[in-house]
Image 1: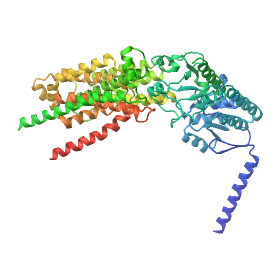
Image 2: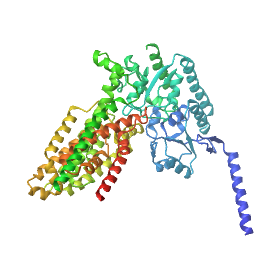
Image 3: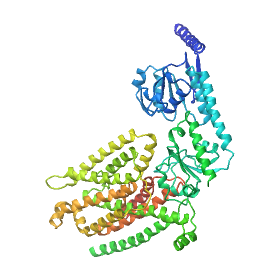
Image 4: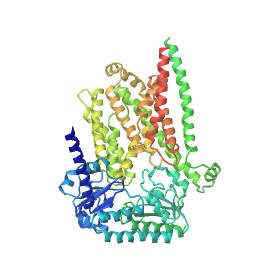
Length: 298
Length: 336
């Protein structure tokens, strides 16, 4: 009995000692978006990204050379297209991830399956789970990924520039006359976003009001009648910025809506506005421009 | 004694028909009256008179009434298809989709959605898929003696399972944004615009044919051999029923995706009330199916306004208690 207690005591001390040693020698320690600590002994050189926006962020902060694996639709910047694809965001090939020998895996809480992420953690990989909900979250994410990949200086300056472009847009547009906006995520059925979604916050930044900001669900299906009732001044949806979107034709049957009557139906690039990444800055610029167009000629 | 029963049944039938004759237009009016916007009827009247456009008029005549009309046609089609299927297969568990028509429609519709083709083609694809599936089942289940109920049922179930697997596959390879739209279609969602001329024509034609064949249908339920011996051309009739039911299902899924429950339960509900004579069962089922779906379409729009729920979800919520009530009442009168 005494023997076991001594051995037990020794094991505890050894574990504690190891823990402190690792902490002391862990060069990089950051907290991810679910509150977990991610500790690396040296900056990550082989990163696997489990979401297209995370790939974009990694390239943006200068860590593009350190990315060794991505998921489907990681199509920006062009260099990312040459990287090995390890599956889709909710169904990836763990064996392929293993073969790439990553030293850091960057995931996305609402986009990746929790089981898959836990499985990767159990295999011993450091997993950083992100969940950016606002522009500030993206800035913080950029800075922390910069730390993890050893690109602190570059990431700080890039993140600052990213934040600055939002501030510019806010200063220019948020004080102008409020415009009622309907953001259409999908055509059939009609999906929109409520006030908690980042796009709704961007609409406010541009001096607009999301007509469905009061709804409880993040991405609710609404009836056509309710859009007619709320009579938006401008309708924005996904497409190619500068071109009339194909779904605009369906709205022509409802000229009682101000946005249809005054021809304020616009597309912004979905990849810019829907991805929580560096191109959100371009997305918000486009969004503010189209809202401003509706503001001046209604 | 026999006469008494017929009299009571006829009276009951009379009551039910009158009730439904009131319910059907009432449900349409109720549906036109309810929605997200309060309608100013004076403005509507003015628009009708002067022709000047107004949002109130637009909402009533271009949004609510077309949807209700679609609901009416779909509900009636599904209920009638259910009656025909149950007679054809002599199986109380048969519904319009048991032969795989909705599965085929769904697969083609989902493929079109996956490819990102314009939304108008989804309905066309659904219709094509339904017809293709029906043709496939007819072709595969034929044997020397025609189409036995068992062969039809088994072939239909297997084909439906095949389509089901394809649907799961298509859902799994689609992008997140597409999947939401697909699921909404699969749960039952009404297209914009009302029922087309073709849809109404199909419903009318099959309804008239079914009413004329009511006697044959009554005898068919007793068994193919018995029906033959009583002068019914069973092969021709059964093929016609199959095609009729298939076309009705194609109409329904084209207009509203896959709405379940109506085709299975409405015929049973009405059997509890008016009996199994198809001369009575067919008209009441058609009217009940239509009314039921008009009401559930209205509820789908208004229960969680401004959010819109898929109609197929509400149909079960409305229909299950109703059916259980009728079932209990039916069994109580039987024991009495």
